[in-house]
Length: 123
Image (cartoon, rainbow, N blue to C red; front, side, top):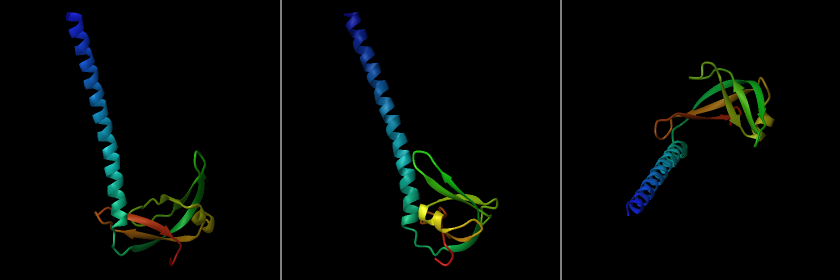
C-alpha cells in the first residue's frame, strides 16, 4: 500500500515538473511574440515624417550560411557616431557601390522606438 502511494506521489511530482516546464516555455514564447509584435507595429502604424540623413558606403559584405544575406558598412550618421552595418536586399546591394552615398530615413516610431530605412538618394 505504501509503495502504491509513493508511486502515485512520484507521478504527481513528475506531472507538476512537466506543467512547470510547459508554463515556462509558453512564457518565453509569449515574450518573443510580444517583442516581435511591438517592434513590427511600431513601424507599420508609424505615420511620422522621416528625418533624412546621408551616409557613405564604406564596405559591402556577402554573408553565406543557410541563407545568403547582404550588408553595408556605413559611415557615421545620426546617433551612430562610429557608423553601423545594415542588412539590405540583394537588389539594393547589387545596385549600390562602395563610396556611394545613401539616404537614411529616420522615423520616430508609433510607440516612440526610432527605426530607419536605407534608400537610394532622392527615393
